[in-house]
Amino acid sequence: MDKNNLPSLPLALLPVVLTLGLLALQLFYYGDFTPHIPLILGLAITSLLGVLRGQGWMDIREGVFHVIHVSMPSLAVLIVVGMIIGVWIASGTVPTLIYYGLTLLTPSIFLAAAMFLCAVVSLSLGTSWGTVGTIGLALMGIGAGFGIPAYWTAGAVVSGAFFGDKVSPLSDTTNLAPAVTGTNVFDHIKNMLPTTVPAMLIALTIYIAAGFLLISETVGDVTSINQITSGLTERFNLGFVPLIPAVIVVGLALMKKPPLPSLFAGVIAGAIVAIFWQGVGLHDVFTFAQSGYSIETGIADIDTLLNAGGIQSMMWTISLMLIALGFGGALERTGCLEAIIMAIISRVKSFAAVQTSAIGTAFATNMVAGDPYISIALPGRMFAPLYRGMGYSTLNLSRAVEEGGTMMSPLIPWNAGGAFVISALSLGVMDGNMTNLLYIPLAFACWTAPLIGIFYALTNLFSPVATEKDRTEWAKQNEEIMDLGDHELAYDETAIT
Image (cartoon, rainbow, N blue to C red):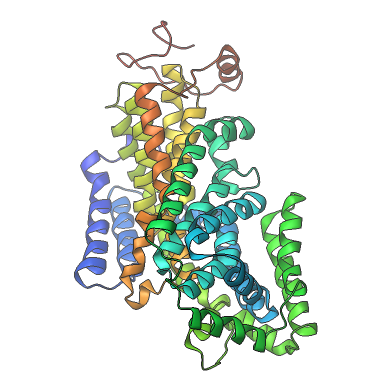
C-alpha cells in the first residue's frame, strides 16, 4: 500500500485491539478455547475499515487469499502429518518407539533426552511440525507411561523441535527470514547460533535439573509401565521393521529431499508395514489415514495414547489457520500492520531499541495475525531499510524475526504453530484441559532465545555492522536505505549511500 495512504495509528490499532478483546472474552471470560469466531469477526472488522477508507472489497479479498495461498505448503504438511500419525500407529512405528522408550529411558533423563532427540530429528527434517507430529507424539506416550505431566513433555518436545526449524537449511522459515532481509541463508544460520546454542543449553540444564529434582525415578507406576509395554507387545509386532518408515523419512531428509514428499513417503512406507507386518487391511489403512487409529484394549493408558491421528484430527487446526491467515492478510492489505510498524520505526533511535522492536514486532504480529510467515515477512521487509541506514548488517534483523516469529509461534495457542502443537500432541486444551497450556512457559528454548537476542543488542555483542561488501551489494541491488537523521549510527557517516 502507498505509504501516504496508510491509516493513522489509532485507526490501524482499532481492529487489532477489538480482535484481541474478543479473543480475551472468548478464552478467559467464557473459558472456551475456540478462537475461530473472534478471528472471523476481526477479519470482518478489518475489511470494513478498509472499505470505509475507500478500499475495494475485491482488493482486500485478494490480500486475504494471497496470504492463505502462500501458506498452503504448511497446510499440506498438516494434512500429511495427520495421515502419518494414524498410519504410523497402525504400522507399529509409534508403539515401537513408545515401547523402547519406556524400556531404555528413565524418568530422570527423559525430558532432556526428549528435547535432544526432537532437536536432532527437526534439524534433519527441517520441519518442526513434522517432528512434533511423529517423534513428538511417541515421546508424549513415553512421558505418560512414566507418569510425567503432559505439559512438561510437551515443553521439551517443542523446545527441541523448533530448534531445528530455526537453524536447519531445509526449513522454510530459515530460508524465508534471509530472503526478506536480503541475506545469505548460511550466514543467517551462523548468526543464529549465538542465541540458539545458549538457549538450548539453558533448556537442557533445566530439563536435567527437573528430571533429577522434580521427577523421581519412581514417579511412574511400575505396574502401569509393565501394563503398557505388555499390552503393546500383545497387540503389535514390534522390532526393527516398524521403524523402517521413520528411517526412510530421516534418510530422505538427510538426502536434502523436500519435507512434504519425504513425509508422504513415510505414510506409504507405514501403510506397507501395517499391511504386511501387522496384518492390517487396506481399507483399514485408508480409515486410519482419514479418521485416525482406533483401538479398544481395555487398558486406559494404551487407548489414550493410541487413539489419535488422521486427517480429520487436523481439521480444527486447519480451519483455525485458514481464518487466522485471512485475518492477517486483511490487516496487511489494509495497511494496518504497516502503519503500526512504521509508527514503531519512527520512534526508535538506537540499535538496541531497533533490535528489540524487531523481535517484539515479530512476536506481536504472531499474536495478532496468527501466522509465523507474516510475522517474519512483514517486519523483515519493513525494518530492513532502517538497519541499512544505521549501518548494521541485516543479519541482525533476520535473527530478530526468527526469534520473535519462528520461536514464539508455538507459544501462542491461536497461532498456527500453537494450534498445531495442541492438536498434534493431543493436549486436550480445546476440551477444557487448560492445565496443559503450561507447556508454554516450559518450552524454555523458545522464549529464552529472544531474551538472549535482546541482551546482545543492549551490550552490542554478536551484533555485526555492515561490511563494505554489504553496502556495495545494497547499492547494486538498489535496496532501500532509510534516511535516519538523529538515529544512532554504526558508522561516523551521517548517512549510508
